[in-house]
Length: 117
Image 1 (cartoon, rainbow, N blue to C red):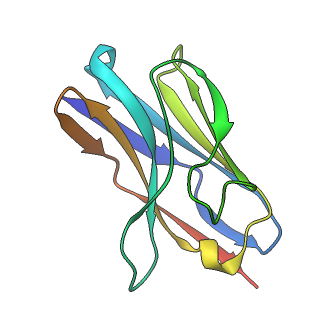
Image 2 (cartoon, rainbow, N blue to C red):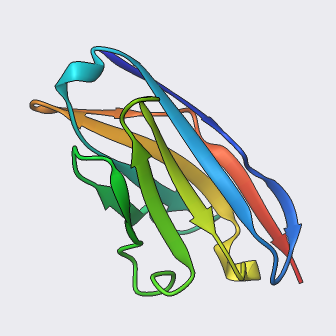
């Protein structure tokens, strides 16, 4: 089992920045990919970014954010981060951390990000 705890959400004005964190615990040795999805009101959950098992940093995967968001992973801290810059009102959503482990996927409880115009 893997437990994920997110932090860092909140209210920010358009153009601002936030950094989300997701700390993993439990069977961390078995974690492969980690990343973030988001779900806006009335919309389907979408993949924002994911990163493989090595520590590092990369651009987000979603076309709508890849030039503004980056994902990074620190295996020494068992934590994945989502740095969100130049936020827009359309980025408002609940952001969910996930981790894959063998044939399972684990989710965090979600953290609300609200971008005001």
